[in-house]
Image (cartoon, rainbow, N blue to C red):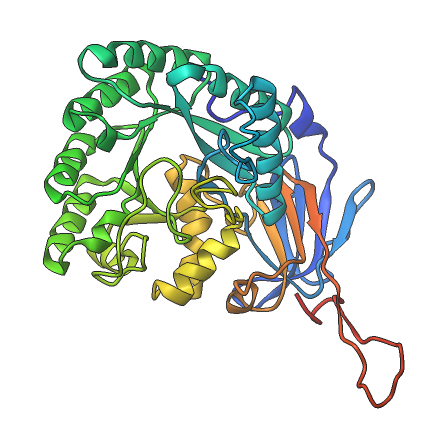
Length: 423
C-alpha cells in the first residue's frame, strides 16, 4: 500500500521538544493547561497545574479557544491559485509550477488550521502523471508541517479510451497516490467507471473518493450500492445536485447513502473544479451545496471541505475550514459545534486519520483560535495558533485599531488583539 500518511524524517517525532499550552479555554468552558510530548497530548490539568519542566516550551493561550485541528478533505492542489491567469498569459501546468502552487496552497490552508489535506489531482490528458508527480513532491516538501494525501482522478476508465486511463490509474497508485478517485459522471459508462475504481482500490488496499453531483438518483443509488462495504472506506462529494431534486426523491437517495455507509463531503462555499456546478436551494440545502440537513437526518456520515482555492471555478476560494463551518452553521441550519465537527472530527474520519480530542493520549493536532465560544470563533476569527504533531507550525496574529472620535483629534487608537479583546 502506498505511503498515504507521510511521516517526518526518522526521529523527528521523538525529538520534538515538550510543549505546555497554558490557560487555554476548551469548548466545554474549562480553562486548562495541556502538556504535549512525542507528538501526543500527555496531560490535561487545571490552569497552572502543569509546570513546563526542564527544556519544555511554554505557550500562553489566555483568551484562546483550543480545539482539535481541522482537516481539508477535498482540496485541488493542482489547480489552486490559478485564477489570476489570463487568456493572454495562460502559463502552462509545468511540474515546477504545480509543485510551487500546491505547496503555497497547503501552507495557506495550514495557516488557517488544516494540518492534514486530501487533494484530488487529475491524471491523464496532456499532463499524464505530471501533475501528480508535482503534488507528491510538494507533499515531501511539507513533511513535518502538514500531511498531504493525493487522490488520483482519471477522466475515462471504460471503453477503448479508458484503457489508458486504467493503466495510468494503477501507475498513479504505485507512484504514491494514497486514494483512488475519479468523476464517474464524466464517463460514458458511470457504473463501469465505479466498478473499475473499486477494483483498483481493492488491488492496492486504498480508500475511494469520488466526485459526483448526485443529480440522477438512480445513478447515485447504483454508485452507493457498489461502494458499500469497501473496507478502506468510500467518500462521495460534493453531491450538490441532490439539493435540486424533489424532497421525496432526495430523501430516498439520502437513505441509500446512509445504508451504504459512505461519507459525503459537502462544499459549503459552493462547488469545485472537479465537477460542474449546479443545484438550487431544495430539500433543506443551500444553493450549490448538498442538502446537509436532509443528509444528517437520514444518518449519512457528513463532512465538509473547502474545495476550490482561487482557481477558475472559484476565484475567491479561501481554503479556510472555519469558513466552511461558518457557512454550514449560518446557511445550512447546523449547530455551530456540529458544523465545526464536520471540518474537524468528521473530516479526519473521512480521511482515515486518528481521532483527536483535547485529552491525554490523543494526537497533538490542535488549533487555538482567539475567542471564548465556538459560535464566536466561527465568525472567521483570524488570530490562530496551529499545532501539528506536537509542534507549533503556524501563527497568525491580528490587531484591530479604531480611530478616536473626530472631536478629540487625539491620534491614539484603542487596540484590539490582546487575549479576549478581539479576533
